[in-house]
Image (cartoon, rainbow, N blue to C red; front, side, top):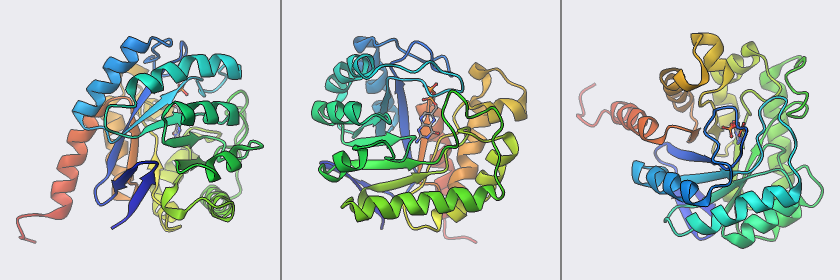
Length: 280
Ligand code: HH2
């Protein structure tokens, strides 16, 4: 059975798990940002854990296309008090950042995972992770959040994304990060057209075949909006369908804004997949 080690925690990945998003931002695309309100963040995080979230992912900088960058100081000011307020909820806390200084502050505050849209490419990031016992999610993106949706282009999107993730995972292991602390993510919506996203989702098994647990972040994303024609606050049914498709292709962690609904959907999918009745 695959285990995923995040600091003191060891997560069993025999069933797909849910990562609940705690955005302490004023400008997240999904409209769920909590503006660094520690009490509201704690309430939301506690509710997510009650609803079945296995990981809490705290973010202090929006990465939506065109988002304004946030300084290191401001990002730390947003996320550290929230991590301190939720670290005792019994599940690993992940910090969603690409900045080494924020990673360091978050790990010191009690985070046990780093979710990096930049796959530890920033100078010093790899060393911080290697010197810790925290887990990491290495994500693919093309370009930066400011420019990534201008004209994303690939010769072979699945091949390029898979090759990049394999390369970053090898670099991480070479730096001393154990394979059981590494998770990969093709980065839906990060420098990808609708067609790129759908091709990656359809072939997610290629990322899974690299041998590391795979995270899929599809919740409320514009690809769901493009397919359904729904506004961001009406994308739950589409997001659930995308989550179920991702787990059917081997994803093990689903990053979402709507924890309870996703946990239920995955429970039904899992029960049917196991066919506990024994009938074929
Ligand atoms: N998506 C977002 C942010 N971080 N991390 C990973 N590993 N995978 C993703 O798909 C991913 C991510 C964007 O979603 P959200 O955090 O809700 O929005 P914003 O960046 O606007 O706060």
